Length: 151
Image 1 (cartoon, helix red, strand yellow):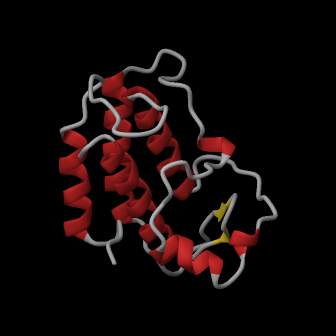
Image 2: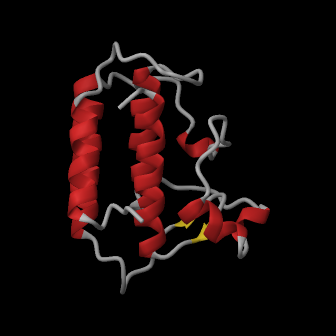
Image 3: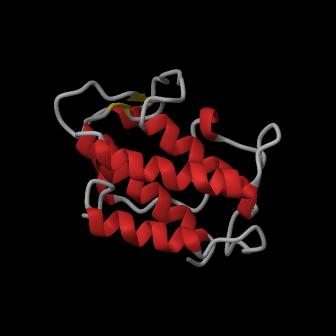
């Protein structure tokens, strides 16, 4: 299982992000590259506790669904996203370069956090998650969207 806690997996993700451009076309879905970049930046901010969220009462908060979707089940192409990370492109004067830099910085900063011994943010759909779960979910989310854009 790949995770953002694994240096090799992080490096792989960063290399794939380096190939992403504003002109990269999606293989499925409605997001363009700018919207996807803003979306995954927001997802990383959420996982690091930098983006406030509101917890929803969903069946995905409970075992075994939570475990299956965080660690194993491939994300559906039309998967529901928490509204906190639904984006409509670059935000308030942001640029592609600024968002790409923020994404790389958040992935690098994630490695300095420890998966144990701290309180992790509650995911709006999956509820309370451990640091290990956030690492796996973060990697899987990034991988899903990079595959969406053929990377």
